[in-house]
Image (cartoon, rainbow, N blue to C red; front, side):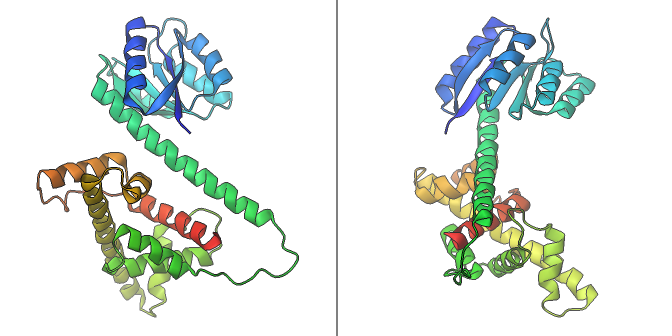
Length: 300
C-alpha cells in the first residue's frame, strides 16, 4: 500500500508547493487538501489519511488545536507540523500533542522529501509490526484438535538464516543475537522483545558467572552486538551502492535501519571515509525486527 497524505494550510502557495513535492517524490499519494483547521479536521476524520501535513498558524483553528481535537476523536495517523515560528514553548506544545516532525517555512523541497521519507519508513515498520501481531493472534486463536507437531525449524536455524542474509553469520556478536532470540522465544511474548537489560542478564547468567562477571559480560555482549549490527549496516550499504534494487537491500535496509543512517553510510563509503566509529545504529530496533522475523520464519 502507498502512504496517503493530506495537506492542511491556509496559504495557497504553500499548498501548491507541497502538492508538487508529494506528487513528484514518489513517497506517497495526495489524499486531499484543506484551507483551514476546521475544514481539515472534517476531511481527516472522513478520509483517514496516513499522514497529515498541517500548518501551525491558521485563522480559524490553529494546527495544535486541530491535532488535539483529532487525537480526542480517535484519529491515529501521523502529523507533520509546518511552521515559520521558532518559539520553543509552542514547538514543545506541538510535540506534546502528538506532532512527529516539523517542516520550516519557507518550504524547502529537500527538507520535505527527507521528512516524508523518514515518516514513510516508520509507517512501513509499524505496519510490519501490526501484521506480525495479527498473524500471531490468529495462530493463538486456532485450537488444534490434536497436539501440535514439533517445529520443523528451530530458533537457531531461523535466526542463522537471517544472519546469513545480512552477511554477519561469522561475527562474534552473531552468537549473542541467537542466544537473545532463544531467550525471547522462551518467554512466549507475542511480538515484543523483552527489555534488553533483562535479556542480556538472562543470557549471561546461563554461563554460571558471578554477579560481577555477569555485569561485565553484559557490557561485552552489548559491544559485540553493536559491532555486528554496524557490520550489517556496512554490508547492506555496500549492496545498495552496487545494486539499489537488490532484493536483500530493498528488504533489510529499511526494515532494520533508519533511512538516514543507511544513506549516511552509503555516502561515507562513496567518499571512502572510515566512518564506522561515527555510524549510529538503533540496536533496540534491529533486535526487535530480528525477533519478529525469527518468529515469522519459525511459524512459516
